[in-house]
Image (cartoon, rainbow, N blue to C red; front, side, top):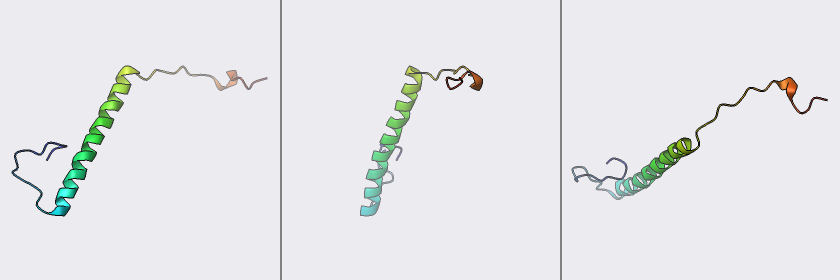
Length: 63
């Protein structure tokens, strides 16, 4: 099984525990995929900017 694709049925969960594990695995893998795609979209929409280096002596706390 890859992510949420069950496949052709060559290997199937037979016990209750393996069926429950497969259900949680499928749901969590879809969630991980969605989170990954979301982060990639955020980077594409709002690319990180290079910050200018600021000298510490020029800060607003100087009298």
